[in-house]
Length: 231
Ligand code: DX5
Ligand code: ZN
Image (cartoon, rainbow, N blue to C red; front, side, top):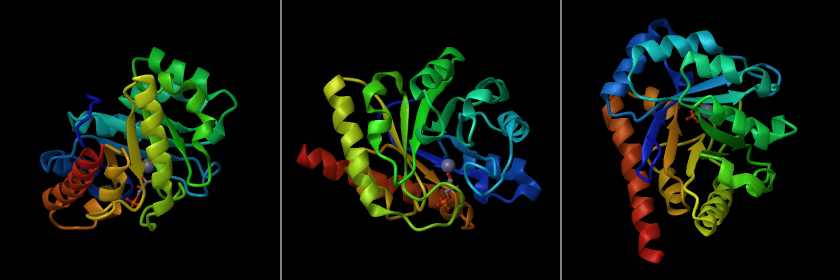
């Protein structure tokens, strides 16, 4: 499931919840690689979304993996809930916990891919010492909390730093980006090492989901090509 190919993950935050089943099936049919589920608690971030019941419901609707992004203050208390609900990849914010390495191990022990997220103002040093215990790093390209925000370009330096550190360790880690991803922004992210692209408002904001997903992938592929030309 995790590899070097480009992965596009529509975020259901921007889906029409009146017909959630239809929405997730439509993006799956349109070529999505994963469904991204944004869990917010009204405390770690001001916004409030949904919990494991919705994740479990989405799991029943699609066959592609679920990428669950926890924007909550106490992720350690809920790992089992989201693992049981069907998360295939589970990310929490490094800045939300005292011992991120232990939590990463716990996620892996549930047979779920371990992922760690950082907001734009938080350094990658929060998790670099134990990068080898991480399956996916989520570099937030907006501040966590809301869909539809503008991409913050200087976050690409963090993508590059993680990609270089992983290369040195010969450790395969996915670099995921989330926030303001559209038909253009994936290019610079992929050129700096990102391979997993979360897109909410861009994908669900259009009529043709297939075209929108393909546009994200094409922009990422342009960036990947550029990076392979320089390396
Ligand atoms: C923001 C969430 C994102 C959100 C992205 O806190 O983590 O996953 O859905 O929305 P867009 O793609 O609209 O920036
Ligand atoms: Zn997210």
